[in-house]
Image (cartoon, rainbow, N blue to C red; front, side, top):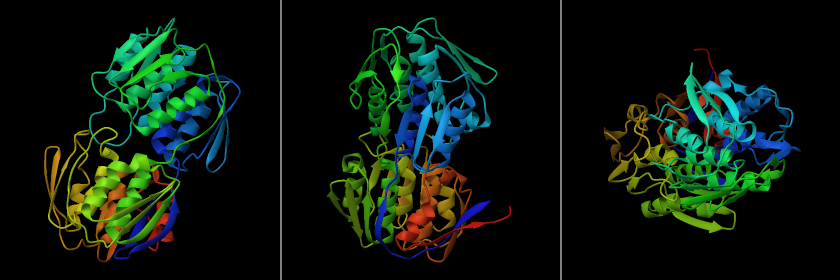
Length: 420
């Protein structure tokens, strides 16, 4: 097993490049199986475990893959298995995109119910509602979603709640349905726009992604294409927060500043300096910032995936900060780990009240989930003394080479193998 060992207290200086977006890649890879002709060549793929997991799943379905470090070619013309039931399917949340992709192309599928980070109840009822509205029959049998349709017919679908997963999943299936499908009350995150652009590159007809209403005119088939995944908004936000927390000056390359506006606004409010320049952004900070209030919201609001890293910064920001987590009900599991390091945090339901302390102290802590892991790394970087972060397999699911990137900025961090 591996752990991260961090000796904190060092300012960060330098430049790093942000990888392709995890949340886009884990939807685009399943979407590639909808190409019944030619191959899909996808670039700017992050080198993370969730991507490798999906690559293994696609192979199990019969796809032929040529994998390079940050790109993959997918030949899905030879799929011979519509039953996704491997351990990889069970352990990752994004495997549910296989349902919409297989339903769209083959009009049937069997996909085991997905796992993912334990951050709260994440039902797929809105996914099922959308599939059934298109004409599919859905059953849950022995822990699997069993779905089939004689035909998929376009229709109007209004989601009861804003759901990123349901928006993408139903959009996948509707791309190969007959007629026009209108999706209302949809999510607007950047990776939804990226998936829509990818599908359009394959020959789909999707308009309105990034707004409240998406209209999809079904086509008879999709073909392979070449595509590059957008930069990762959440990875960039995490490094912005780390730079603000540690002090110094950090340049992030390969980003889209528009996607980071809600994060930039909060860091500026706290006292950091932010400068945008094309596809790069510079964060300059003294490391001495003031507390702020945050409410997580769907895009373009403050991202829930950045809430946990931000909470680490707020533990050493002057005054009182309040975080209202409006997306997931169990996204404060990392708070107990921060308390081990001396943080003063009180959680009441979906609200965390944080009174800034002068310093955190190094301790042995664990990553309770992906973004909580990033929070613990940031806490270790700003703490006095040594911090050991365990369970870093969660971090590896979403942050490529996190220790190497922080080393490049001057942090004292290393990955160490150990026996449990």
